[in-house]
Image (cartoon, rainbow, N blue to C red; front, side):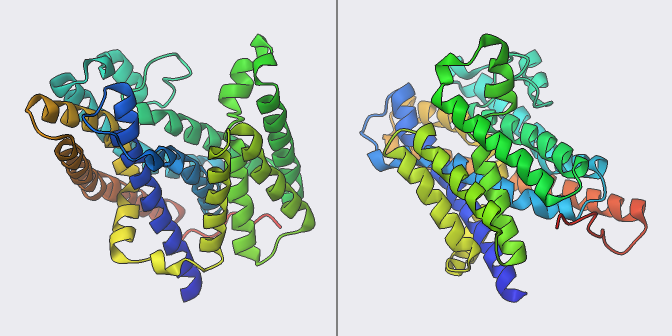
Amino acid sequence: MAESSQRLSALDALRGIAALAVVLFHYLPYYDQLYGHAFTPWSVLDYGRYGVHLFFILSGFVIFMTLERTRSAGWFGLARAFRLLPALWAGIVLTFLAVHLMGPADRAVSLGSALMNTTLLHEYLEFPHVDGAYWSLVIEATFYCWIALLFYGLKQWQQLRLALWAWVVVSYASVLWWRDIPDALEFLVKDLLFVKYAPLFVSGMLMFRWHRHGRLAVADVALLAVAVGHALIAYKAPFSLFVISCYGVFALAVAGHLNGLANPPLLWLGRLSYALYLVHQNIGYGVIGWSYQAGLPGWAGVTFALALALTLAAVIHYAIETPALTWFRKFRHRAIDQPAPLPARTLP
């Protein structure tokens, strides 16, 4: 049990590393692309954009733990809402105010758009993101809806696996013939089924099955191989190979070979990862731009931006995110009137 717990802690550390990789990508090469730095950022940081892909694999893995401990789709939806929304709303308020005060001006959105962001439906309704990083949260929320529908609607893992096979096959075909997708199907395929990213979530779910049962059936191994292979056609080389390496790192962590990552600094970063993701990008751009205007060197602006993002993330995590989750767990405990929530159903 202790070893299993340490493996999961290593995954939390990976979450922190992925979040930091995304932050450095946004602050260095991506900022340089958008606004221009006074120096040339290290090109390897371009790979940091794929930290989001590691988040998606992690989400697929973690979601089954939540599903198997949750009695119904209603309770699952509430659990996800309390996990995502309080911190998101805080991030929206802080980012909206900071961008209107510090800039960049091209990142400012209207109050109406900001309010729509609080629902995570804004992209589907063609409202801009308060922060550019929020695109992945829309995909996350859509994934939760799909997987809840499939998990609670289907009775056996074999049935769910067939649905996942169909999803991955559609993802393959859609990426291969991306420009030929009929206009009438674009919204369903590209947005609701998010075919460029769905195999990442599926892979995470299959790796959880491996972690949970200690082995995978042949059909599961085949599906995992196909899902991983999707990266070869969905992303151009060498980035496709980097995405596949994310699978490898994740598998090593699940197998217990990266337990050394479970150290206090990385675990702390992992705990802050969601809040950090919410507040880093546009607020950081404002700080970097302000630093340049003040005549400071570029590295100073990036350092200030990172320090502020970590500070805001810590405030959101400890003052909002953690208390909200604690309150919800107590509420759920009282509502179901038992010492701890039992698994609703484990798919055999």
